[in-house]
Every structure is written in structure tokens, then in C-alpha cells.
Image (cartoon, rainbow, N blue to C red):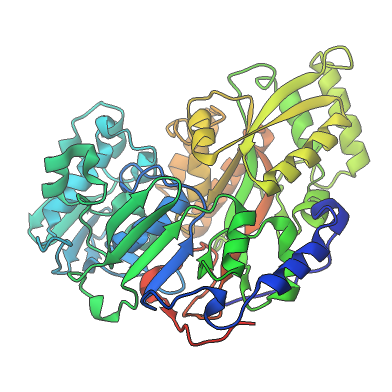
Length: 551
């Protein structure tokens, strides 16, 4: 567990004078023995997780959100899966080998069963990878698998899903054909899009298979109950190959999009863990009050703004440049969010192995006053001024911290004559609007699926329409990102991606804001928690000791 010390906080701005109330409320609310919650009527092997937002789906082929993966990663194991620190280890895959050119992988499956006792076979993986490539599945995340032969062509309806480069050599041997060598293959083999789904169940129930009573999994737990906008409950899977080492009989994942309410539930002992729970304004004080329960560490993630380039005035580069350069990111991270975030002038977040980090917004080193004057001049050139200001709605996360961020951005833009109106909305609806390009400016965030810069840069490829919310398209950018896939020399490959990132930033295809941190609340009764930069802690590895008395 990492708990780096945080500096002070502008309480008037961030907490609105509520710091003392939070401290008194915490002291009054926190109870000893069992975290203050009455566990007497329940097994100590029941575990409760605050799980951020309500999942749209628990179908790995249709999912695209981290709060869905936090549940699915307990129901399913991939060919590789996360160890306690989030790193890849063998799971459904016993071992694999690659051809000399790195384009064909032969994967030997572990002999194990689905939760209904039916054996997991290579045919399940063939079925699953063809299913995600089938346009009828409408998989939002399929573009992350375009390294598989014919996956993109299948997703675009140009070839049949049966043409996707995957086949079963025998019941326990899978072959995957790649378009190019994939240096991050271990991480992709544990990604949700490469989970197998049970063919015999999906063919019986269709897309309705991913519901309690129908869901069949190959991981530590089985889906038992799903009460929308309240909780998802899973129970231990006796057919899991490592069931003897799974500590919990049940896990209940509570929808905790309201971070304030989640904090209260955690303080009352109703949650053992709360993912992404404390609001930014609460973290500095909580580090003082409960330093061993607040887990923050730099995360491979960022927050940014998507501009709908298909709409005026955002089709004008000068407007986009003015909007980007007029935001004071240092003030945003040091006086507003203030939870260890760093100002982002690049899109790829810090921490990517071997990445040169040569790309950045050109205005990065300009004094803020000069940036504001330049922004005003650019807007004037584009025909905007006091009589014709740039006006727009900002579709954004409906959360306490993003309301605070929005008010800050609103004030910064107002200084250069840009008028923004915050439009908060629930995350699921917001992302649906972004995918449909039904917005002016939208808040966006991305957490690493694999530790390689391509995981961030592929979002803005012309071939990633469901993720490329801005509608950004630049042939040279596409060429560099796609071309980097064919480069075998690691340093040269990284330089090509950095060149592509510079083009994205020069075109203002995205307005970067800040690189984020994890912000999880973890009870001292929880064992084996390891904070990590991808914020993945599978329940399979965790333990609970309810005899520990918390203060």
C-alpha cells in the first residue's frame, strides 16, 4: 500500500469551509471493532467493494469501462491475468510460443472448466474473437484488437467474422495470427476483449446471456444477483482451478458514483474498499486523518477534453489553439484537484517504459499572461470577440470534483472571451453522447489497458470511431501510429509514436488537462492490497481480517 505524503490544500476553494466538518464527522462516525458495521449476522467471508459507476454490461465483448472490468475480472480470467500488483501472469494460458517473425502465437490452454462444469476449450476462444469482430456485436472496444489478422476488416463488414485470424488446433491449443509483432502481447492476453465467453451459453441465450442465472464464467466467482443502480453480487465458483486459495464466499459491488455517499459508507464500515472514491478536495485531509486507508499512487491515466471537430467553431484550428493555451493547468492541479495529479501538456501520461516524451503542447513554456494574449489574438483572427464570443456546452462527468473543475475552466476561458456552460450528466449517458458525436466539448478520461504509448494514441486513429470522440483525422498521424506497428527496433518505434503525438497536439485533436492518481479507500482489515499504476486489484488475491480493530 502506498501513501505518499501530500502537501497542503486551499480549503476555501476546494472544500468550501467543510474541512472541519469532515474531520469532526469522521471522528464521530468512525467506530472500532469490525469497522463500525454490524457483521454479526453475516459470514466474515463476504466482501464489499464500492465500485464507482453502474455497469452497462458484464459481457466482455461489449464492455469498455474500468468499473465494468473491476467486476468482470473477478468473474473471468483471461489467457493471462493480473497478479496482486496488476502485472500479467499465466491463467487460462498454460504457456505460449511465437513464430520467428512474431506474427503467429500458439497458445496451450490450461485444462479447466466453466462454472457449470463444462470444459473451457480453444473453440470458446475462437468463437469469442470472431464474436467481437462481428459488426452485429457492436463491440465498442474492438479496435484495440486490430493487430489480429482480419479483425478490422471483419469489424468494418468487409470480410466474414470467420476470416478473423484465430483457429483451434485441438481442444486445448489456440492459434492467433497477428498483422505485426505485438511487444505488449502479455498485457493484451489479459485484456477483457480477449476473455473467452462460453459458446454453449451464448448460443443458447444470445446477447442476454450476461445476466444472473445465465452467466457462466471461468474465474473465481459466479454472477448471482444484479440490482440496477444498487449492487452486483457474485459468489465463489467451486469449478475455478484455484478455488482453494480464494478467500471470499461472496463479493458485493455497490454502485458508488456519488463519492461523498461512498466515503460515508466506508467510514461507517459498510464498504471494505471504495474504488475511485474520495473527491479530490477530501484527499489531503483524509491523508492526515486516515493515512493508512487512503491509497494514492501515480496512475497511467489522464483527463482531457474532446472537441467536436465536426461542429463549428471547433473545426477552426485557431479556436482550438486558443481554448487549449488559455487553461492554467498548474493552477488546476495545485489549487483545485490537488491530489498528486500533474499538469498534462502531452497526451501520453508519464510512466510508459522507454518512451522519449519529446512531444508536448508548443505553448507549454510561454508565461500564462502571454498565452492569454495570444489566445485573444487567435480568437479575433477567427472572427470571435466581445460581440461574437465562442459559446458552448461542456458535457461532463456528474461528480463533485468535475463540477469544481468545470467552474475553474469556465473562469479561465471567460478571461479570454470564451463562454462555457457546464452540462453534467451520468457517465454512461455522457459516453454514449460522446460516441454519437452529440456534444460540443466533452470531458474524457483514459486509463491504460496495457503499458505502451499506443494504448493512448490509437484512440485518435481515424479507424477508432467509437473512441475518437473528437472525430479527429490526420493521414500522417494515422500513418505514423500504424507504421510504428511494423517497426522491430524498439527505440525507433517509440520515436515514431512520439512524432505522431506531436502532430495530435499541434492539431489540438485533444485538450490535455492533467495526469491522474489512484484514489482508493482500503480498510486496514484488508490484506494483500498493492496500489499500482493501472488501479487493478483482483479480489482473488485479497484477504479480510475482521478481528482487526479500526480507530
